[in-house]
Image 1 (spheres, rainbow, N blue to C red):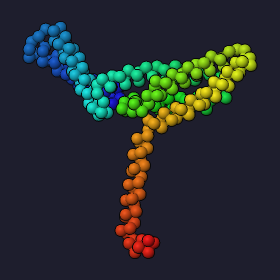
Image 2 (tube, helix red, strand yellow):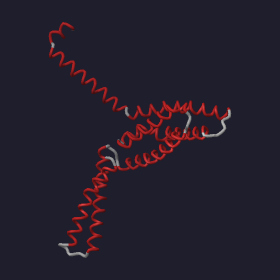
Image 3 (cartoon, helix red, strand yellow):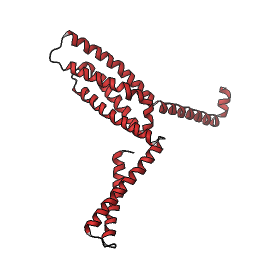
Image 4 (cartoon, rainbow, N blue to C red):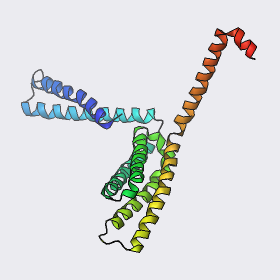
Length: 218
């Protein structure tokens, strides 16, 4: 579940609990205003915490992960998000027109992989190479490319380095595409299976509708 949506749901429950707790403490139980307020706030916070715990347990079970695995994945996704921000900063600062398409592709693929694994953490294991190797490489190369292309005076050595970096980035972009393919490979297999089932169903219906025609075709 989206963290913001989960927070809103918890708040919708916690706020009424806080209000009701205060009313019960202040009127029927005849507590002081200050004591009722403190108890109500603590009740609201406790409700928020308990609901958050249940939401996390449900989320982990849904994606067939242990809590330890989820914490590990969440930690790595958080670190990756910071790296992708670094990557995007470098990408958008580069003014080189030769690498525009390449930079757009890099931005699109890295965001797509991160978004999918954040939404479905179990996909993380299919993208481990991306998170532990390829992302670091692409960040470092892009930052290097930005640094070199931003130099006010370009000599032959810098020009050659830029060409080599562009070439390497191009190869890494293909590697990122392979990473994305691995992440969605199960979806592709499922889709192909569903297509085969649908074709088989259509063929069966045709055979039932036109039995004579199909007999002669055979």
